[in-house]
Length: 132
Image 1 (cartoon, rainbow, N blue to C red):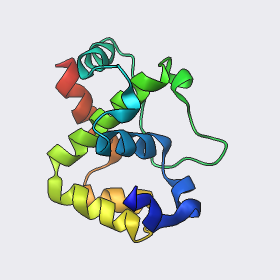
Image 2 (image 1 turned 180 degrees about the horizontal axis):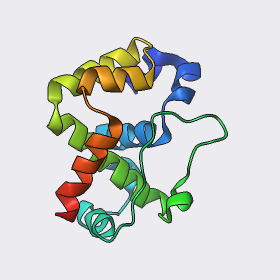
Image 3 (image 1 turned 180 degrees about the vertical axis):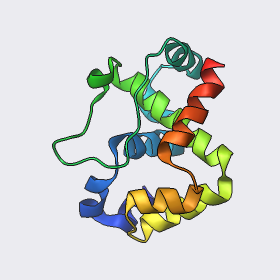
């Protein structure tokens, strides 16, 4: 919540949906995911049922859970799992990323600068953890 207070509503709109919802669910320790467990989310990922993160969303171009064939709670759980992966993958980079976002940096620039990898590269690595 503090991050949202710092960046303001106008900048918040520019953050990708998966990041906003995933971060909220991550901070709340799964609050947005309802009764969907990580095990259930993992099974769907293994079977190819998952969202695909993007670097930007417009007001009218956000892809909802139904776009990916998921219910909202499942999408929030998967979003949270990816946020958790990013933190585990590079804790210093994750912190730098959040601070850059808080300071108003562009999401894409903050991501690439902080993790020194593309979103797609990290997403593929995340999927490999679950698909084996």
